[in-house]
Image (cartoon, rainbow, N blue to C red):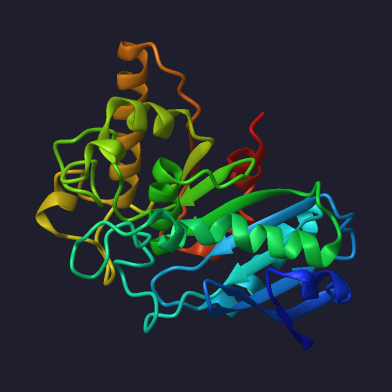
Length: 282
């Protein structure tokens, strides 16, 4: 394993490209060093990158390892950043740091969502592939992070794939932030903000057997209003957003993709044939 440091300044351009196979680099954003687990497949051509977001166990290295088949399949560089629970508790990871630990609105530059394009840019600079396109995929807590990022952050990604997210951000103001756009300032909860959310390139990728509670299931009152399982919640959020966009005449750029008979298992989701459709469509 090769370890290297990547900053966001001129030093990046002086570093060698990432080695083929598995490695680890450190990317520093806002003076925070992130361990980033990397896989470069043999068929990588410098044009595709997939950034993978782990679940609540914060096991980014496992996610990298379990994404290697995706890398080989799509000829994509796999990038799996680690957001440890000490520095990135729920309010800062799953909820992106939009509101701080005291529930106060944070500056957009401090949002964890804002790390996404910076991670991508650091890797593109390191690879000297400034036109490289990238896709995002997250499972469970990582899926929650990406659903909410789609609402508030221009990620620069070709597609945002939220797999088996345990709770959804519904496109309305009736539920508080985390579950909807309620309790947010007008600038972040307006019809225009919701319209932009529905126009985001978001895929809800869900296993049809992920339909019952487990150890990490969000069974809070607001979450249970969304449905009794992750499958049901994903379907309900998609259908609500689709209906609202049609009523308003807004662009709707979401899609929902099902992995038949798959439960709450990121490796099975990533390696499922439907994953290609989740990323690239028809």
